[in-house]
Image (cartoon, rainbow over all chains, first blue to last red; front, side, top):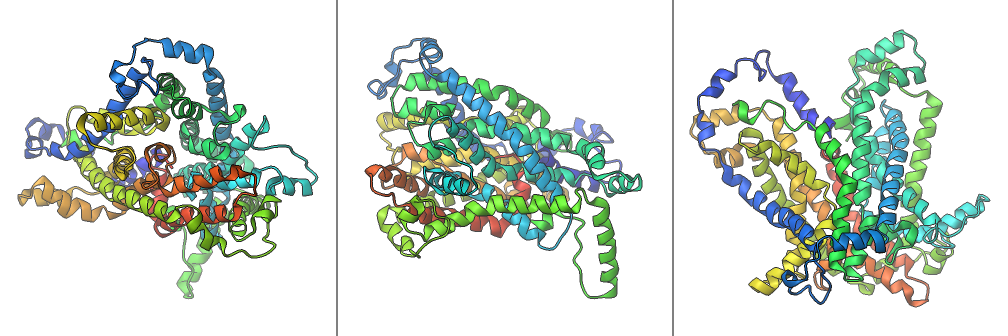
Length: 328
Length: 311
């Protein structure tokens, strides 16, 4: 996203004449209050802002409150009167539920799937970087898995992976005999494979955007030096891609950890225990066993999983171009 | 999409000049080539197979008999085009599609309009809390939906008991939820887009005495159609692809296509062979509008996709 966020920025930076960079010649103007600053149309922020406060911020606070209530289907109607039990739900979630196992499954699944898409996306981008006949078509086809709605992807793979289904038959024909995919320990790998299948094009797009930042001169210099393709890749091209790859890894991880639709539709509920990822566990605790308070404590605990990658992500993204708002 | 991604791509034509250009382009291609030819071909062929086999499978299975799909056949043994007819009466697919189109469509329009006005203020004006607002736009996208589901549900049912407004079970529940959850990303897309617009026109208009509203509707909106289309489509997709909220907050009348498709999973438990053919047909029907949207707006969307990393 830096790439993108910066794509228009780069353009505007390039188009900006010398000397009008924010550092030069602005401060004088900033001191006087321009008419711009006197009637700023804050009311335009209101509709979106109010919605986000009402439906995101307040529920977020509410989630924390509920996580400390003993709330079930009987007390839900008058939830404000539900008994306050402090950290009781958290204690129960950690000691008596499968929360810790689910956190482990979620974290390892998200990390493995994110890392595994790296080489696929990287090589796909490297292979389609140069023009060839039919490249437009190839690129469109590459995006199909990403374009299909997740519930469609999950429904289709569920059909393909069923016992005696097309995947088992196909592998049998190749002499590879495998057991159940939608149940038992192998279901974990089924989840990872399907996640990789549906998300690698995103990695591919970010790397492709990163490749655009490699100048023609760099390619020429490498060619004059007579670098072999892998030497060039390793020492010349990859350094340019470090940023986009790191960003893609973080975003993929966040996306995988929060993913609900794929495991939910692929395995149904109750999920086999090897693929009971945190979002599914939270959902089942709420809407199958109706332990709302307990479920909220699990959901709040899930924030721990995303906190570190989210923090890195927010630090890495350039929020401001230094050319807007206050500088005028 | 190629228009957006390949700057150096040259279009060959018949004239002499073009021939020269083509030669240069060929030379450039050799210089910028990153993989040796055999590896490049292998990568592309393998990936095409990996992508296309499941996609072809959906198409083949949707015109196949249920028994044949259950026994793991890839190609249909006999054509069952009637799957596409029966599917409409087996589940309430038409109602689902209508609900999905209505809710997601209106969400897309409203969300894009809110996003453009919010982004305009964020990009062009300075105020305390602006950076926090921008950071929140990014951070809120990563809040897991499962964390929000329960409190939003409780909030809506509280509104029903205290204010007498029944929200859960109606399309409004989905509309409000999707609109709000689509806003952060759509606004961010518009922020990155508006940053690329020159200020000169706005400033000229301001000197002529135009109000902020006039500037927004008369200058910003007409200039930023590509960005608006992208943020509208992402809002649409968020609604179309959601299963989590729709599975809890809908009644049979307000079910979306995504939930209607899940009904096949539930009817499978009977012991008879599940209706695989119809299920695949329904899956294809649900995917079609989205795929068409992508194909039509591909060149805008690819840039937007990378703008925030949300599906």
